[in-house]
Length: 285
Image 1 (cartoon, helix red, strand yellow):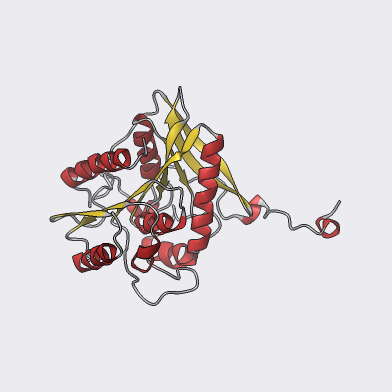
Image 2 (cartoon, one colour):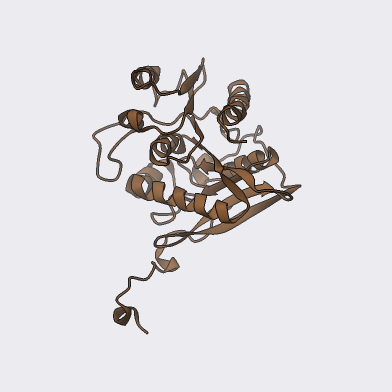
């Protein structure tokens, strides 16, 4: 029977998605890869690419979890502006080594593959066209997938970096079942006027937060000044929300990104320790 005769709207064909598989290696715009790059093996893990059903088709994702046992507490890992490339996959494996099911869904799957683009094109051609509502829905789909694939989503956390750091705050306002979030240098206020695709920023959603968020930021981040962090702190205090911030002295943006020159070992390691403590404190364990 044809689509026209059924009266149903069929899911979007996969070929209409810009990405049906994840990019390999590191994004072009982050090259060359630094000597400090951390590589986590998959020994004792089940790790690799999976397909997540979404309302209009499927999107690719990387997931890692312990090989035996389960179900495991679940952490959504939200990509930097560079998409789900090797660094984000490695973060998933690091979390799996700690006993989590970690899953990173490709948030730009419909809009484009950023792995071969330079920064200016990443922003103008892809990222600027990604709706927040789409991201929230796709993260929900990742949770559904995890629940069916050895994840304990009653113990749900989220962490994200850069572009994904902002998404952590948004998702904490979106999902009432989230236990906790850890946002690494995610934008807190709008760079300009709100628009149809990104109608609100974290500071606009403070009263709607449903889970505590730990914000990890750098004092020398030229894109997210300390005054933005202070504004967010004040709004959270007024709304009586149990969120916390750590601002690392002299740390720039992307201080956790061990494959880039921005990496700072001490704050990165301290932040990773605090992430683990935050999730445990808030029931993601």
